[in-house]
Length: 214
Image 1 (spheres, rainbow, N blue to C red):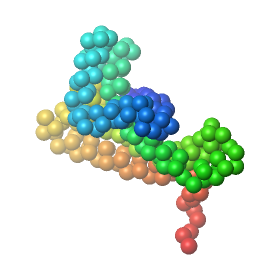
Image 2: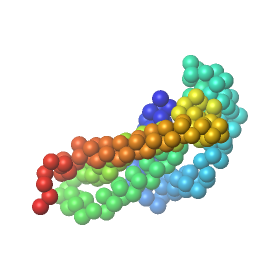
Image 3: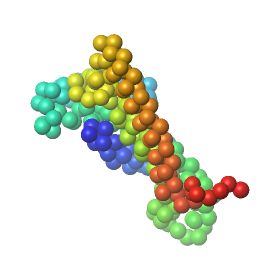
Image 4: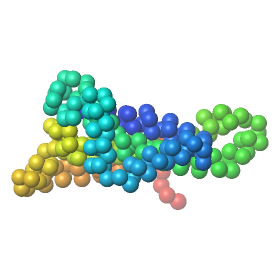
């Protein structure tokens, strides 16, 4: 459940900010977004999770662990979901910016301008439509990343999930649970890659799994 909410937050924030960075390339909004992206990439996940947990508990009086109020209280979910969504937001911002900038520099955009289309029509009808294809392919992988990435988040916030179970099994030398959880994560990763190709074929009609190569 946390993975689903985190993925929703990541796409709601990551896509618009990535587009904003692309449309304001090399300006203040773009540079500010790159600072956040570089921070998330450069700083170890454990460090910024503890940093945001400290800020959340200090400034907003949110619980530091999930078990303080339990799953029935909304406050218990806020910090774990935000911590889980942070790397996905940065990744979506980075790749959305890249794909949109690539499309903005394409030849067909110059032809569309020559035909008299305004910037809004070009962006909505051409640029974003083509840029969203590789982003859509990553939706299943993003969901898998939220679930597999919850190992650290669940451990820090004491969330009773699969990630916390794996770390406890490692500490207790429970080989059966370790092998089972590893197989679960590996299967989830393979399925997400396959589903990513399926989603891309649905978004882009030019891609077909039935036609033979010539």
